[in-house]
Image (cartoon, rainbow, N blue to C red):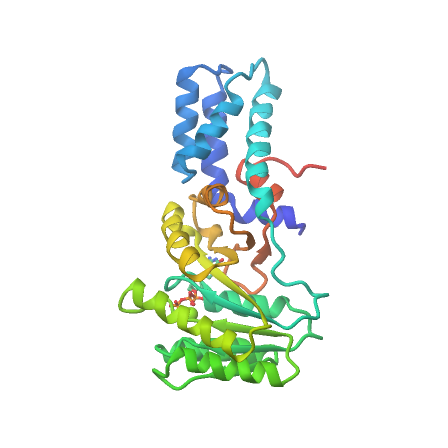
Amino acid sequence: MSLFSIFKDKLSKTSNILSFNILEILKNKKIDDLTLEELENVLISSDISLDVVNQLINSIKKIKISNDDGIKNVLEILAQNIESILLPREHVLINEKNDEKKILIFVGVNGSGKTTTIGKIANKILSNKKILIAACDTFRAAAVEQLEDWAKKNNNGFVAGKSNQDPASVAYQATEEFGKENYDFLLIDTAGRLSNNTNLINQLIKLKNVISKVNSSFNIETVLVLDGTNGSNMIKQVDIFGNELNVSSLIITKLDGTAKGGALISIANKFEIPISYVGLGESIEDLVTFNSQNFARSILNLEEQK
Ligand SMILES: Nc1nc2c(ncn2[C@@H]2O[C@H](COP(=O)(O)OP(=O)(O)OP(=O)(O)O)[C@@H](O)[C@H]2O)c(=O)[nH]1
Ligand SMILES: [Mg+2]
């Protein structure tokens, strides 16, 4: 299956609604005020934010439709506009040729997909690279076990704290081991739930500080994992985590399970934080490098551009 077909298949919940409704609205081949208003509502219903919807509507306002190709043309223009919003956000998180030691800290609210995403990423990293995985979610024993299973499956190193140990001290231990041993990547899993968001963020800030104290020259990326089924509520999470933790990359999961995939475009438009991967399913291969053209064309149910 090509990468494009995977996007198209897995984003069908969003595209079924978006493209079906757009085609219905354009059936009478007229772009008048009523048509534009109806199109606006459909775009908003897939959780595309109002400022993006306005941009998109403006781009098709003056189009004349005389036949079926004209309808297709509208979809093509929408796709091009969406692609141009997304393109600057494409980002390579794991560069297999990179020899520099790299630390990735995965943060995000509970259930967003951090732990499974770490497993998927470990699976992507070439087998000639050495990976250390650290379970800094010390509040849930099940979280540690889940990660240990992933780690063992791929023969990776694994560091876990004791129950309720300070997550920062587990991160410290792991970073020391990472520094001394011949590892290429350190993947750090963190807890998503704490008594409140302020406590959670403070704990994560402390964890990051401890890591840079061990060795300030390590290349550290903070990856915010977002649950795609949250739609436009993801924006609030990027606001909170993005500012406080200097997030350098976003991963949006569960896009296979939602019709609100349009929210990814809103995020790309509002924030300059790059998007490295999208989660398109539960199995280990279902984490896919984010590609703006594949995303834009898939949600409008268009064919791959040759
Ligand atoms: N359909 C689908 N499910 C996903 C995807 N990514 C993660 N999940 C599921 O989401 C659920 C939560 O994933 P976890 O990885 O445990 O989430 P977490 O962020 O570690 O959660 P906490 O540790 O509680 O904060 C699991 O059932 C995963 O299988 C995805 O891309 N698609
Ligand atoms: Mg977890």
